[in-house]
Amino acid sequence: FDTPTLDLGKMADHQPVAALGFTAGVALIFGFYLLAMRAAARLTRERTLWLIVMSSVAFSIVLVWAYPVGAIDLFDYIFRARLWGRYDFNPLTVAPLVVSDDEWYPFIVWVWHGSPYGPLWSIISVWLYRAAGDGLWRNLVAFKALAALCVQASSLLIFDLLRRSSGGHAAQSTRAVG
Image (cartoon, rainbow, N blue to C red; front, side):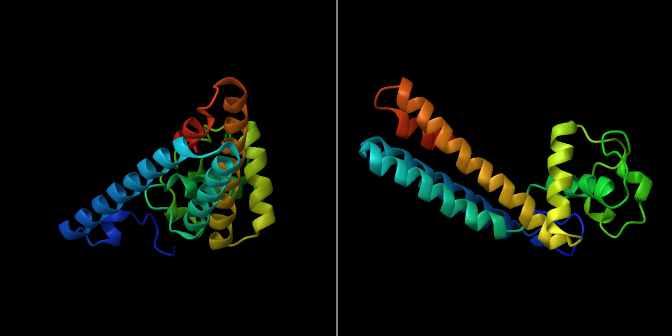
């Protein structure tokens, strides 16, 4: 995480074999996803909810600790929270370019404009930044943990809404979303 704007190409030294490995890994993930969809269609309501929650929790735990490959926007979220939390700049109106000498600046991509995410996200993210402290690693984990919690809450909400309205298809539909 200490290499600015690290992407898959840089991590794999732009080797074709690495691209094939990544593609195989993504295909494997989709295979497990299809297995989970089939399993969810055959389970009872109680076991279905357990499968949804536990698989989602397991995947989230892994992803919280993984480098945010393909998600460099995460660094932008954190940096915009830092604009407010450390420099007292409004991230909605001040572009990150203003503090280009900041040590975290090389990690971000969208430097020319204020935040497009709105005031509610700015408030949540500066609170999270302050809670995590002034460390990039802690902020990466904190922001990803928030995303993981939101996935869990969304899955449970979707399951409950579908359980009430879709007859016996709540589990399969929720697995498709969560």
